[in-house]
Image (cartoon, rainbow, N blue to C red; front, side):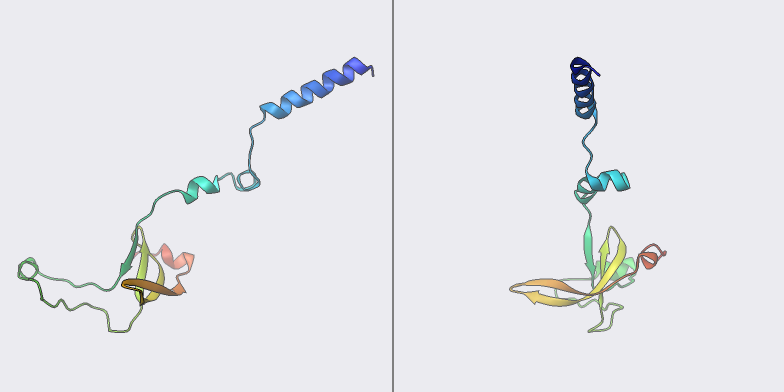
Length: 115
């Protein structure tokens, strides 16, 4: 091959490299942009318990009323993401704030079961 043919081949190879999209290793293997997925906002809720009331009983609640929940004192709380239970934990205090110490992660198969 002549020197000009080699230069042409190198120029074509360089041009081809420039035109290819830049893809991270994670995106190349899974086809999913992990950074994009991780930037999606979700709603996280710590569920202490629940109660079923008639509307008239709900309307009678005032400041200082006690609402009995279906949860036993000292039992685990549910940690929900977008309404699905993903973990269980215990209430902790962090300074003047309340927090949740995760004690159990719910298995992925249990997360998709209807409530």
